[in-house]
Length: 172
Image (cartoon, rainbow, N blue to C red):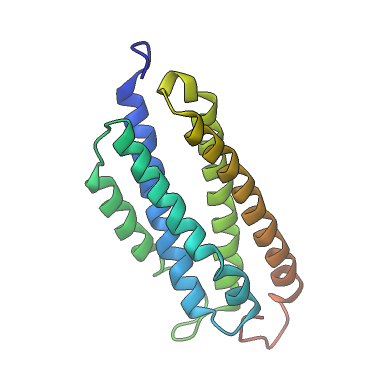
């Protein structure tokens, strides 16, 4: 890594992305389970292994750059994700039809942020001393994030069409 590089800021940035990836993996795993047998489940389930692999890529990147993992950030983000599930959604015992819509909207936003993270790393790749193989992987990760955004955008179109139907108590 370049001496002109602020490794303190880089460590914060990468650890924040690892924390976000941890939350994303947890959220998508839960969504795949909760929405199993629905359109939402069918479109979310293939994202689980992708997000898991991306999180592992970030962890390997930290290791390669000799940046310590800040476990408190990962644990804090994981706890916050679980607490975030306790929001009021208009239903006490059952899932609200709004839950899937809000979760997919949040997930799409998070993946947009993740894509920006990949682009930032690519833009800094020479200063970070990333080998050419890692730079190619970043290109692939950007394409994968774009594909994930397209999937979630299509899913949102389905949810937008049905979420406010009177009498709907289940997710499409």
